[in-house]
Image 1 (cartoon, chains in turn yellow, brown):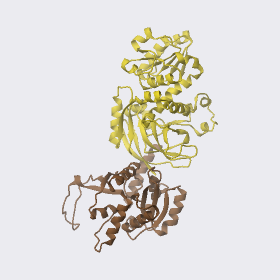
Image 2 (cartoon, rainbow over the protein chains, first blue to last red):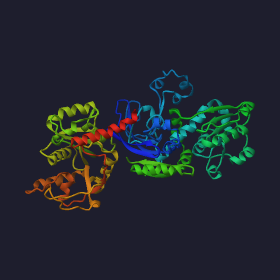
Image 3 (spheres, one colour):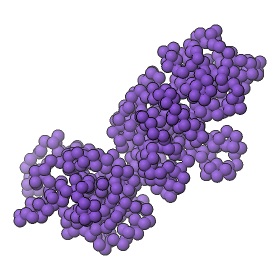
Image 4 (cartoon, each protein chain N blue to C red):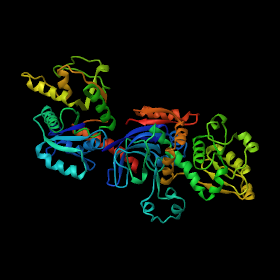
Length: 348
Length: 237
């Protein structure tokens, strides 16, 4: 059996590729229904990585945010016909069996295992007609009014992983602040609201911040003076804004507080370590989520308020009938300034 | 129900191979027929599959069905004297087993790269219009010649398409078309199932095909198919 796949082969160059599907026993097969484009995908599309990195990655299927339908099941996988969220982490077999020699996997999760793979980073992503998956990668979705909302499961799982990373500081969660007016900041605020209390939020764009569930929103220019006390801060800024955000968080947080860094930056931010020491702050970092974070995401989507908050992030549904539609989706994604994403509906 | 009728009755004479027909050739470890069957096997809207093939190949096909875990194939039917005969044998078997109130997708075994989207679109069009044909627009100018020596006509390219498969029908519609054709004394030349309906002035909806849904008819086609797949495999280096 063959699968039509969209692969990036060079910056701003996709090709249709016909791949033989790995039908080995143990693999479930999933037809990809919906996907969404992440900033990491856009960096590959624009060629915003060094030449060596790109040379080692291309050709590769992009997208790690997707949902689909199981068309052939396997032991331990959801039954045929199930709607599922696709988990982009592929742990090593040793990790799955609990026999991995790396200590970090046991402490932080299998997604930190040096032997783990991540779709659309060091292995093919989900821009495929049919994906062969390990059962670990599939989680059944609850029925929901608009199933494409579940495309945001991956981002919800990242927000859940930020909270999981700080689970030793649960007593501080009710006095939380979130920096970042993008999708991750928004979703982190939604998750905090569901599991603890509404956070205070800080960002560049007041209009976007007005959409956040929060008990106070502040622009970056006013936050230092106006923000109330908080004991744990979540940095969801990333990119060039990371440095300003992290330093402002260090300035504003209560002594003994915890900062959880979740924004990805290629810029090596210079941060005020002196004040970290003075205040006795704890800094935690996290990126990729684990299956348990996806399980939290799926559970949260069963809550009507949370579902509505996430559904509000769907800006448009783009029908992908042809590779030219796929190009169009990427070009459009580069210019999205609103809070949310387009969802790609695949018809390979 | 939606039932796929896979025509695997060809002898492969155009391939110039003597030991096995084209639909049983191997593409990187898997027979062409199995690649084709897998596309229908995993499609959630396909309920059953009927395979038409030469009697001599029944045992081998049964072995492959077990080996590759193809569970939707409910029977193997003997091929007819030509494509029309094979198609009719399969259609009658489906009617005997499941009645006339079904959708049937007739597909060449030698088109292993059929997409899930094409199958879905065929089912929807057959249900709505009673009959459909999978086509792609022709990129090349088509030349008509009556004697094979001199150009007779250049038809308007925008009105020309290349026919692929599946061709899909409500079962009673296509069986009736076959039977009306067989009842004729002076039968016109018809090369496929949609051709029967065209002869009888029936409406057929066009469904978008795909260039990759090519038919392995000649040795060149096999090379092209294998080259397409080989190129894709470079990404795994």
